Image (tube, rainbow, N blue to C red; front, side, top):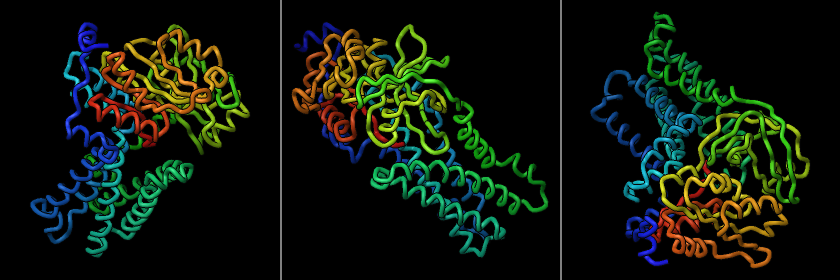
Amino acid sequence: MTTANLHDMGVRPAPRASRFRGLLADRRFYEYRRLAGGAVLVNLAVLLWAIGPGGWWAGETPRVDALAGAVTVNFAVGILIRQQYVVNILFWLATRLPVTAPLRLRWTLAKVYHFGGLHSGCMTAGTLWLAIHLGTLLAAGGAGLSLGTIALAEALVLLLAGIAILALGPIRARFHDLFERSHRFGGWAALLLFWAHTLSITADLHPGVPLWQSLSGDVNFHLLVAITVSIILPWLHLKRVPVRVEKPSDHVAIVHLDYGDTPFAGSSNALSLSPLTEWHSFANIPTPGRGGYRLAISRAGDWTGAFIDNPPDHVWVKGITTSGVARIEVLFRRVVYVATGSGIGPVLPHLLAGDVPAHLVWATRAPRKTYGDALVDEILAASPDAIIWDTDAHGKPDLADLTMRAVREVGAEAVICISNPKLTWSVVETAERAGVPGFGAIWDS
């Protein structure tokens, strides 16, 4: 396809990547880390200001109220940025830009799904502020606060430090179940300790004043209320629902749910068989004009293996239907979707909806044998020109090269990849180094 053909179609050729853009495409400097690093740098600037002009340690007693505020603000931003309603609002705002806007601007806004970097950066900074807060109290002989307040601060620092350590990439990958439980149960414990510490420090700082009166005008208290509501909200949507499970093969289960909720394309829901211990998020597959939705669950671990081998008749669903990475497709005139294996699940609803012209590259083993004729025929009906690569018959392809060929052939403005971490990084980095916007999951949960 020539450049002239692309202009006739209203599709601009992808811009060349600058050396700077090529550097930013490197996974070491990707948007998630830049957001996390930016949050930490902002907090460092505040700390330097507090040491100097702010005078938090200049008086007879340190400004423990200001230190407590720095802790609360960081935790509020870190937690609220991952609240499902907030996530959906962020995606809605980011995708308001028309496709006539400059590609560079649309490219930047489409990285909205890296918002988890703010969670990581602010939670880290908040924990460090809490450690500074505790160190200040100990150095100042308590700074007039009770032993109970100090003990609560110590417990919080130890608990949050443990959660942060388990959240480190290599540890989280190796002990993912432990990471999930530490975040859930440790997070709840930290919230209770945070409440106890807030009430205790407020009483210490305002002796003789009724607690409710001190709290009513305290911004930290109102932020803590917002944090608490944010954490509770998903559990208010907890429901046990019936499911119908198809097994095209021993590798895949197609789960049908119809309980009065039809989610939008590009969304996900969290499922569980034991709601207090383990949750797993899956992309929703709604079908236009039909109620309910499907999920594609492939064998990828103990939980998914047990689900496929012994399909349940009911599952627990929690939280609010939440936007996922592929929602950003509307920012582009034409996209190439790249999927491997059950990554077809998040892609299929976009092919069925047809809101954006799309070309599919799907690499999987024995597609009809693994996923069933019905699903493959449905994909081909929605995308007749799809490239479906049978890895059993042809071996594993150079997915990045296959993707860039497809981009050139159809004149796509962007690439959206749903695969394992290694392949996703390969495809996204290759695209971005070539000046083509690339997007894919970042595994930050």
